[in-house]
Amino acid sequence: MTTVSADRRPAVLALAGIGALALGAVLMLLLQVVPPTDEISATWRTISEYGLSDHKWVFDLAVVLVAAGSAVAFAVLRLQGRLPVLAAVLGAFWTAGLLVIVAFPKTDWANAAATGAGGTLHRIASVVAFVCLPLAVLISARTVFPDAPRRRFLARALAVASLAWFAVILGAVAVAALTDQRWWLLIPLGLVERGMALTELVALAALAAPARQATPSPAGP
Image (tube, rainbow, N blue to C red; front, side, top):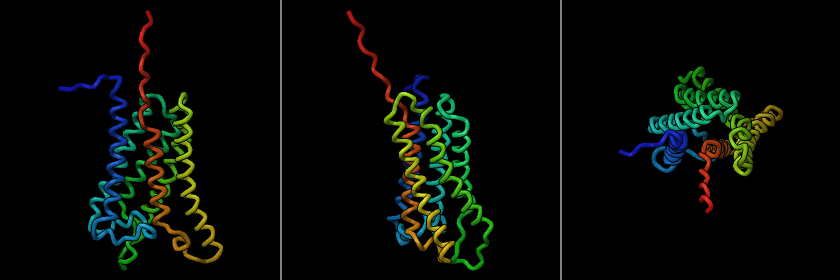
């Protein structure tokens, strides 16, 4: 029976968290290539559209995997004393937001009997999640990587890129408010949202990836 030494357990748990993130992302990508969800436009329709399809269970499983992987990644960093309190709170909001997205599907506008309460919670949770994660990465990058400037820069760059994706959405909303247009038709919303989601998952994985152990130099004569 193989055992894991105590000093390696945080690294193993972090890798397990990253594995859950990756598996969730793969399942979400799979929905785009299998029928009937392959007919959902990845350019114009949001990711949550998969949650209204016959493959809702796959969508839910993918999001729950991402939430679980995120919780593990943030918990490991916090237990190691490498995650500031504010970043931990933001990470908790990200994780909780994902679970709300699963619990309350987006509004099905094709269904005349659809109610807006659950859809409103879904939209709020989506915004909270997509904003909180990159902020958590930005806030914690220095603490997580005090002696690794390249990894610190990578994590920050990915977090800024995530916020830049979100800024595109905010720009569309602002333009729509001034021109009386539908903001979701001003940009390829599906593409922007998928780009933002992928960038954020990579940012979290970059933050959570365990540091390489330094090999001790051989003792001199």
